[in-house]
Image (tube, rainbow, N blue to C red; front, side, top):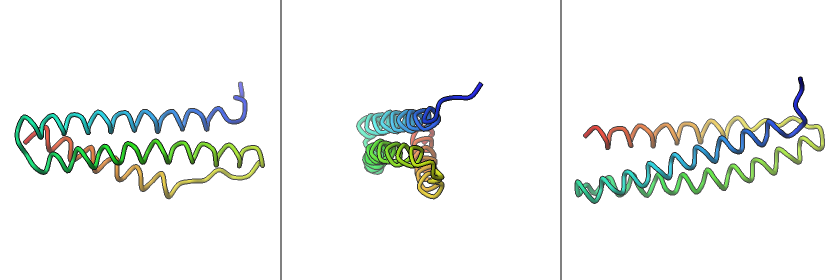
Amino acid sequence: MTEPPGVQNERTSLAWVRTALGLAACALLAGRLAIVRDEAWAVGAALASALLAVGVVGWSHARYLRAARRLEERRSVDFAVPALVLTVAVGTVGGLALLLILL
């Protein structure tokens, strides 16, 4: 069974929105821990996570529109480098959040 064109693009966009929601949750957690533990670097982690969450939502929407245009034109939809950069950034923020919880 084949899917109609564009369904994969929508699923990918929704996955990035879920990632942004996870980053927003990390920002809230880091902010809460900054208040409870009075850690200055936790405030930075919370701000970085919140900014990354907003950036991911914006990039996801722009990527969705670009991919939809390319699918209509029957061109290749390859955005590997920005996705790799975002993946590394999200992994870094996740690692920092883990350190914040464990310390």
